[in-house]
Image (cartoon, rainbow, N blue to C red; front, side, top):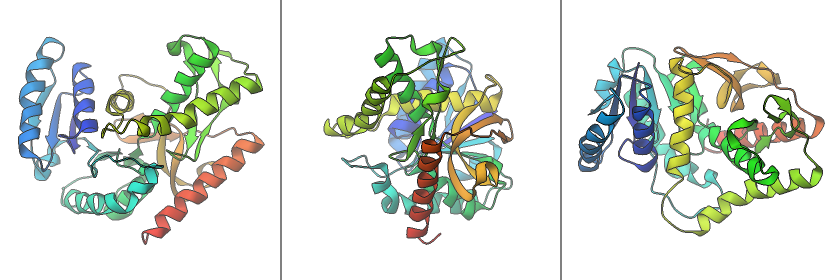
Length: 303
């Protein structure tokens, strides 16, 4: 399969390209970006760097060239700034997403679209509305929330990260819903004391504020790259297991006409299966509130 990255000269686009490329997950990666010099710089440098690890080809291209590609990652965004919530990027990034969709609509066939422009749930829905493709082609990238939940669990419980299985659903942002009751370690249920849950919650919710306080002018590109590589692994068949993504629901888990994080199985056509959520009473309330919030944001920009 071939991957095209819109916003490929940016931090998320370029780091994702490199990590996906060195893992040899696709045969070719094309960077599309308005910043021609930076785009070409990445292609030249990355193309040499990956020769030691991978057969993946790195090229530069334009929108029309995406006709020959199977997967499109949209990571284009306004420059990073200090914000309280990812939703503050909504109005600024709306024009970018709509203009990209106008270009993608010219392509002769539907593609798998991975949405990585914030707010992801909102823009995954807006892209679906603009393009009119099969809803199974739209994958909102929200796996970072699960990564950070597992990170916090590993710190709080002093356990090996790779042996933890956990899931975070809901909105990619303040409305995320960590499923503490389903956490396991070495495939066995991992009991959590209420104090440990409080610690994990504090670490997860406080991470974004702490990161923003650094005022580094950069988003979390490396974590996003690692998470996006996991999504691509599922699409290409390199790894076959559920992953949390924001997808368009049509009756699944009791919701319709909204994009929200939920466990899914992916394949070369996009979303193969949307798994049922088993939620406790409090988790169900949180999930309902997340869906309501996402719908409100969608309505606020006229969709």
